[in-house]
Image (tube, rainbow, N blue to C red; front, side, top):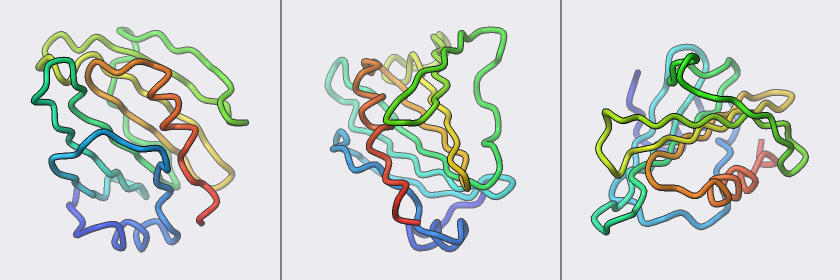
Length: 142
């Protein structure tokens, strides 16, 4: 993992504009942009989780290769749905070892003709909110 200085470096690493969500996100305390092994970049919004019941993190991966695994396959159920014309795999894991604002975790994965995408939402997110963020990812700016 290599920390990048910002979105322009994420664009350069992908060879196109990084596809950001257009939906309003909760207040972020800090954001990290990093290159992951292979040809992918992840932007991680560490959210203000100081209020009880607030989610702690949101991360969006985009890359020319599938993202590295995060969740153990034997502990998660996967469901395929159609969302905004995209076939999305939705997975959820309880993450009992994580702090409250980071559990459970929702993971959404989908693919376009040129990119693999993964949206990870940690904390007490409602699935419709996570789906709305995924549906808002602007894939046209490449």
